[in-house]
Length: 287
Image (tube, rainbow, N blue to C red; front, side, top):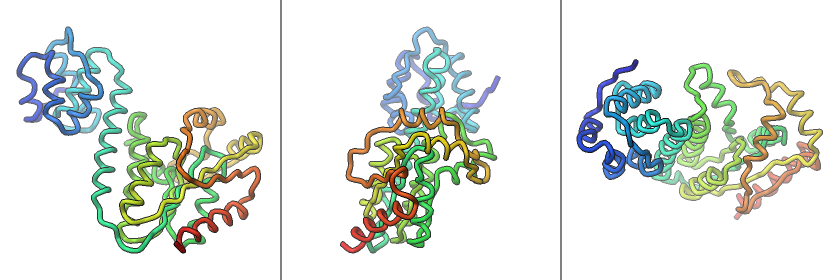
C-alpha cells in the first residue's frame, strides 16, 4: 500500500463532510477544480481512510510524492468503482488544455510563417508528403510518431496520456517556430476536430497562416498493402500498425469542416501530391 503525505491544499480541503468534498474542490478552482466539475464524483458510502488510500495510489501512479487535490478527485472515482480510465484521460486532457493556453500567450515572432498540417490515418501517404514538403520548404517537420518514439523507452507513455502528450509536444514545437517567425510542417493523424482547430487558432494567434491537408486513399487494397508491407524505421516506435488499427482510426476520424486541401494518394502520386500542396503554399505565402 502506498502511503503518501497530503499536500497542504488537500489537507485544507479534506475537513468537513465527505459528501461535500467534490463541491469544495470545484469551488477552489484550478485544474483540480476543473476535474471535479467535469467528473462530479459521488463519495456516497466512502470512508475518509479509503479515499486517502486511493488518492495516494493515484498520486504515486503519476509519480508525485504528495497527494494533491486532483489525486483526491481521482481517488474518489477509484475508491467508488467509477470509470477510472476515463477519469484519468479527462485529467490528462485538462493538463493539455492548460499547456495550450500558455502557448497562446506567446508573442508573434514577426513575418507571416506558414504551418502546414498534413493529417490522415496510416497508409494514406501523409508522412511521405510531409517529409517532401519539409525538404522543399527547408522547414522542420514535427512528427507525432518520432516524438513518441523518443519517449517510449522511458516508460512515460500510458493509455490515458499518450494522445494529450503527443499533441502537446507538437503544439510546443510549432509554437516555438511561430515565436521565431518560421514555417513548420506537422505530420500527425489529426483525427480530432478539436485538435485541428486548436492548431489553427494557435497559428493565427501567433501571426501565421494555417494550411490544412487531409490525406486519404480511396483504394483500400493499396492502402492495406502499404501499411502491412512497410517498416518505418523510427527509433523506439512501431515498425508499422495493424490493419485493424487503421480501421479503428477511420471510425475515430471527425469530419474536417474548415477549409483545407484533400489529397487522394490513390489518384495522385507523391510528386503530384507535393506539387498541389506547394502550389497552395505559394498562394498563401504571396498574399
